Image (tube, rainbow, N blue to C red; front, side):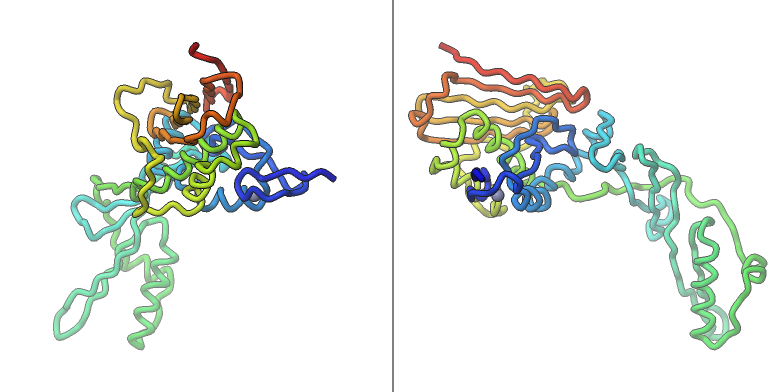
Length: 304
Ligand SMILES: [Zn+2]
């Protein structure tokens, strides 16, 4: 049986040890696939690298705006937590439906101990109207701890005070905004495209070794001169928000690959300093992956 090299661990493997790899991750509407990433690398890269891009807060916004349900079949919620404006100690949870739309606001349980008369303590539990059983359990725990008889649901109802809180809420973003790790995922896309267009000899390029190391192990404090620009797209870039794009340029002294993810992220990388090693018959290659329509346009050509 013939063996082929995985483009990430570069080990020779049997054909059965490979599975389909989406160049632009499937979760963000990627449709361009390659079949030269071994199952081991595929799963490690998914959890170590791709997720920094696919779970990025800005990608949540992109998926929600463009209705990209991805592998989960759900649109991500943009806000999940917050507090009441009138009472910043009262936390809320925003419950969303599979379309990422707000279904309802849920109060999280808040327990306060207020000094009462004659050295007594008043325990006040504020919580969501939907969670009556849970509240009764909390109340009974407090009663039990103080050697007092537990309450039935009926008694609980008779002592319950309902009020409508709010209505204003202050929401917090779902997560912190990652400023670096997603760049490894952009470099991974650039690496896969470069290999796709230059062929297997690229795997031995000294720069390919450096880039593979960055993809697997890149750290926030590292210095990576081959990253010419990586970050949020400059306002000049005008691209259909539903499209991801890759561009390879073979120049006299270097090979550059730039990757655009929607109109959000851009990464421009020096993929090789040995362009003379490659004579692919083109000097430019480009791909556009439409995340909504699922269409792929791929083109190769030369300027001269
Ligand atoms: Zn591998």
